[in-house]
Image (cartoon, rainbow, N blue to C red; front, side, top):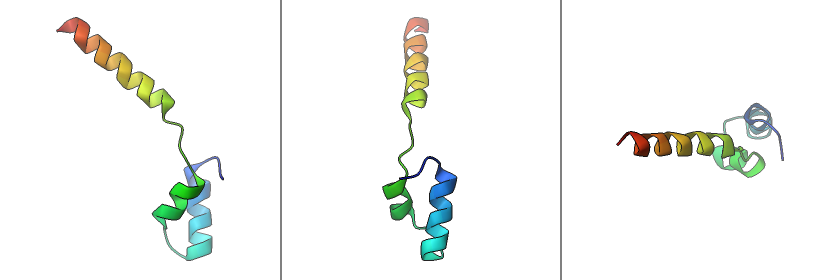
Length: 50
């Protein structure tokens, strides 16, 4: 498990000699909670406007 996508990409290139998306996703899971919160606020704002 790695902390950043760049780390996962570097390991993928070193291990496989290429970008291996399934491998990258197996060792790196991004935290999208901040983005989900932003989208939720936009939806609520649009509901108020309409």
